[in-house]
Image (tube, rainbow, N blue to C red):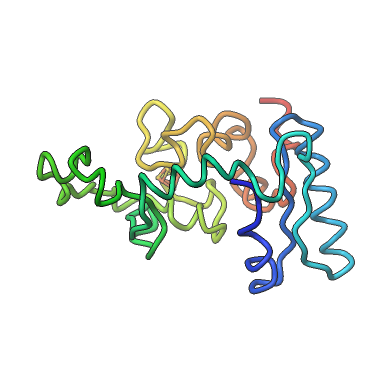
Length: 182
Ligand code: SF4
């Protein structure tokens, strides 16, 4: 997708954005660049993954995506509906849309009343601040999206930090380095 869509976001919300890869050094470089911007009061888009990502991205692929899909409102687990946050098949490909074909557009996922995944996803709380963390909710019996996925914040806190105290976890601003004894 490139990153041509990001500069207006960095401007509008006054936040630094850094494109990074997935290797440890890529992540560290991305974090470092974001921190340097924060400390100097700048907010631009930087590309720390230029060996793969270009500003324009793959225009041919983007053209195909624009032909096959169209932007639509989507419901996100733990958060609710976000306008224009998803894609659905475009009119030309609508016959392949399972929601239309099997009349299942109205399926509603029941979220657990205990789960605060929306707050975790928005950064409003840390996983250990959810009362169900490690009790009613574990990777074996997840109550929400952030525990279902092994990459979810709740699962990561559970796998790497569940034996340190909730207070320590809740205040661990820079991650889980204190959880090395787990
Ligand atoms: S610990 Fe479980 S119940 Fe609590 S927010 Fe995370 S996924 Fe939801």
